[in-house]
Amino acid sequence: MTPLVLTLIGDDRAGLVSAVAGAVSEHGGNWDRSQMAELAGKFAGIVLVTIPAGRVDEFTAALTPLQGLLDVTVQRADEAPAARVGMIRWSLELLGSDRPGIVSDISAVLADHGVSIEAFSSLTREAPMASGMLFEANAELDVPTDADVDALRAALEDLAHELMVDIDLGTAD
Image (cartoon, rainbow, N blue to C red):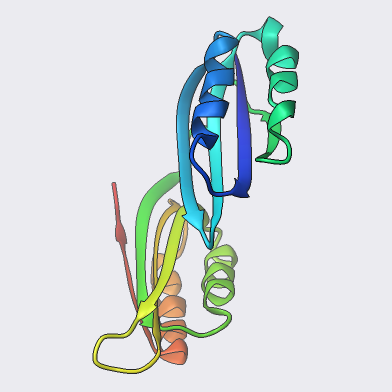
C-alpha cells in the first residue's frame, strides 16, 4: 500500500467527500486520517489515504473529473511517519482581542525555540459585553526535550503582554 496525502479545496456543496471517498474505495484504498472544514463558503481538507501500489496512477487519474468542483492535489507520503524522538507534546491555548499578526508573532516565537506546530485551529468571534472581535487559537506542539522551556515561557509571556492576550502553555502528554 502506498500512502498518499490529498489536499482538497472547492466551493462547499453536498457530495464532495463522497466523491473522493468513492474513488478511494473503488481503487482498493483506505481512508486513514483526515481533517476538513468549511471556511467562508469553501470546503477545505487534508486526507491521508493508502492505495495499492499498482493502482496509484489509476487512482490519481480518477480524481481528474473532480477538477472544477474540487481542486485536488496528491502527494506521496513517507511509508511511516517520523517518530517523535526527542520531543514532548505540549498544548497552547490563546484568547484575546483580534488583530492582524497574532499567528505570525506566535509562530515566530515557537520557531525561534525549535518548536514544531503539529496541529493548529483558530477562530474569531464577537466579544461578549464589548465591541470588537476575539481571536481564539489552540495548538498541539512538539517541543524538543532539550529546549529551554523557561525561555520559551518567558518569550510567550512577553508576547502575550505585548499583544494583550492570554496564552496558556502546558504539557499534553
